[in-house]
Every structure is written in C-alpha cells, then in structure tokens.
Length: 332
Image (cartoon, rainbow, N blue to C red; front, side, top):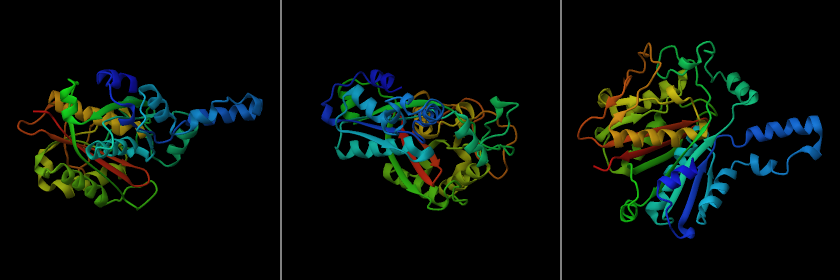
C-alpha cells in the first residue's frame, strides 16, 4: 500500500531529511508472536526465527517504509486502537503545517485474524455472531446490529503542502484542512455513552479547519456496528450538528470492508477523499431496519454529494476512549 501510494504521488524527490513516515497499527505483529510461541512450545528455542522481534514490534512497518522511501525526518508509529491511523494523519497534517517536514507517507495496517484475537473480541461481545450470513453481519445503525466483523488490510496516503504539490504537478485528490484528537478518559473498551468527548473532537476539528458545522456536506462515520458505539457516535454528531444533522448524508463503509482496527482510519480517509473528488457518497449496506435511536440521514445507495458544499469529516473512535477526526475539502 505504501509503495503504491508513493508511486501514485509521483515518486516525490525531496531531501530525505524532510520526508517522514507516520504509520499505525492497533495490535502489531500478533500473528508472528502467536506462531513463534507455538514454535517455541513444540520445537524448542533454537527453532524460533531470528526475525521474530522485528516482525512482531508495532513500529516495524513504519521503519520498513522509511527505509523504502528514504524518510530520515521521522518514522513514527501510532498505536491507539481504532483511531490509530487517523491519529497518524492528524499529526502529519500538523507537522507539515508547522514546517517540521515537507512530505509524509501516512497510513495503517492490520493483520490479526487468528483464533486468539477473535476469541478475545468475542469474549468482549464486540464481534457479530451472525456466522450463518457473514456478508450481511456488519450492519451499522441497524436496530439488529450485534458487533463488528474483523478485517485485515492496509491503506496509505501521501500528504504534503498544497502549493508544493501543485508546483511539482502532483496528482491531488483532496485537501486536509483540519483535525483534532482527544480522549474520553471513561472506560477501557466502552465509549462515553453520551458522546460528549467525541463531540468535542469534532468541534475542535471544525475549529481547526475554520469552518462551521453547516458547511459540512458529508460524514464518514466510524460506525463499527456495535450497539453502544453507534449510539454514542450518533449522540456526538447530534451535539455538534443539531437539527442540521438530518440534512447531512452519512455513510458507514465498515459495512462493506469490515473493521481494519488500526488501518480503518486511513482507509476511511481514502473513501472520504474519493467521495469529495468524484462527488458520489459510497453507500452503507446491510441496513434493513434503521435504529430509531440513531435517526441519521444514511446513504443507502450511491448518493450525489450536495452542490455548493465541499467539506466532509471522517471519524475514528477507538478502545481506550481514543477520538480522532479529520476535515477534508475538495479542490474546487
């Protein structure tokens, strides 16, 4: 994913001292850890791979990508559950605006489909139990939602100053104009049920972008398809947007992709970017009976973006109470 993003950005030719990598994961190399434990237990210590530690450490991806693109300014790792890669984007945005770096390759990845993580999430009652119909198991904002579907993958973006990108003829999809991070400080897995801290993160993101709630044309919700999470996110959105929320089309792309944990924020940033560029909102799927307690304006089919509005937000809220929000704009 990182290689594809860097090539798509035109293989930028910057001083390595001004190139950074911000990469994220929720869990890290858990498959390496668990498989190496099996090797140790069954075959002994001499059979454990020499690369076990480099493969399991959460910062490994950032380090390898930095080597690939010669990023000497920084190789930062962000581990904040489901907010990880949105955190990485917010920090990259701030570093570029402050002049600390010229360009940052940012994103996240997750590969944790293994019986132990699955069992742990199931014990938390976080996973959907709809095993007989898995393609319809992820159903954010549906009254019968019962948990998320774990997924694997990676997503990468390249961020740089707009004027620099224009000057070198880079392919520009959209512009990040604001972002904010905070924490619920409430519970290790559950969100604040009233969504008050998440609402503040959204408000702070809009403030950093110097726009008003009524300027927002679209929301890509975090929306994992859990009962508590979706309801808390609705309450947060309602606090920020009030009655205006009924006029803002909302999508929940985890219904199609599953939940990439530390990779989800970057993936949804790409969805939101493409929404602004192509002016079509990707639909939420599997919505059969919308929960009356979350009366959002949900896009259940590809929906044209409203005219004369060019701003959108993407939300990420993670275990531990991590909240992260970015604001994007199209170029027109």
